[in-house]
Length: 75
Image (tube, rainbow, N blue to C red; front, side):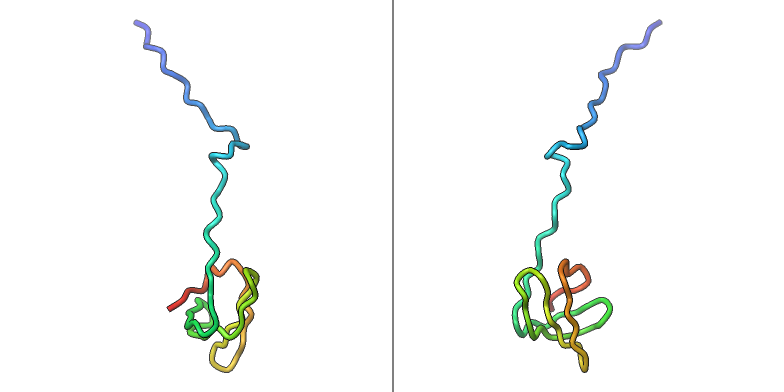
């Protein structure tokens, strides 16, 4: 007895635009925003560079955090 033929699964091409990874949306911070950072803790935004970096005051130190802001979020 023969088994019925199954249709072959089609693998997508690696250059297919439908399989391209989607970039996460860029977070936007404004002056005076209260933020939390995984490493530095609570802080306040004191400077903004358009889609490049944010200057944040964490207690006694100031840190320039560059994009992507994966470890930082607003409160």
